[in-house]
Image (cartoon, rainbow, N blue to C red; front, top):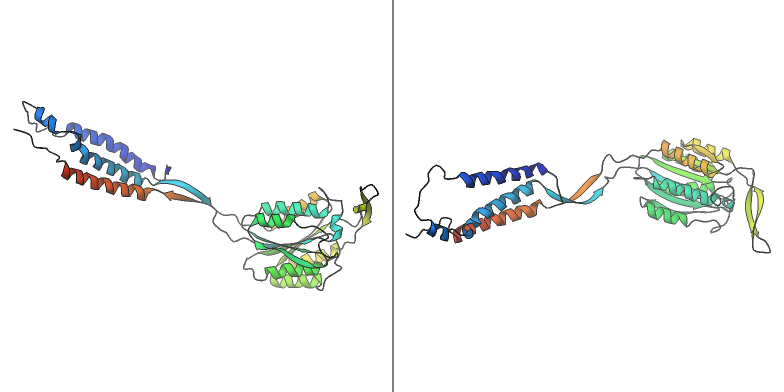
Length: 328
């Protein structure tokens, strides 16, 4: 327990010596001298002090209430208006190329996206994935744990192979269409050229520009030969072959330029991290100005206690007369 207005407790500390001085010096000016105090002492038992004691305790309880005794229940962050961000991730077969750490391109992308998610505080995030077709994995949400969990489940080979960049962008745009956020962006990650789908990537970019949605395109990989898993040998060991993957950085650059975003090409995990860091700096999220503390208030209980004590003081004053009769 703590007190939000502890200065009121000084009143209680000053009250104690004031009461003592009152009891010590009251009636000093007009004394009556008795020859025998035996009868008075016999009648003046502790019961006749109860009204006075109850009054003092009632005052102390009231002062404690004024000091606002509380206990901290929880600390909350006031909601602020963040951005709506859709991530469009390519899961085509070429994302299994082994030129990225810790394992391959898709695992590197998932790790970097997860780190990006951990830096969010008020943004809504969504996730779509695409190969020959596109699908929604996570609708816009601020539940970052759920986002990370569903992101970790993505892998290549679950849908027909291909790279439908236009369809991936179109699906991401459709999930932002009802958004009221002031800033809406799409982060597009792919390692190849568009070779599938029924929506042109540039048409999708025009729609994004019209809707005020920025597209940040990240090309993962290079056009140089890279190691790619081709199966297993007779002894069950993984086999690899250097394969040259087709890429189209010009297309991704056009998509970003049309929508007011930016294009990046990453040939390593570190460069991929730098791309996300740059996007984070360009699209800085608002930070709550302060945190609010929610308290459990105990002042009402002390007020009730003070009232009860005052009632007890009045009742005890009626039951036990303050000035008992003295036998003659």
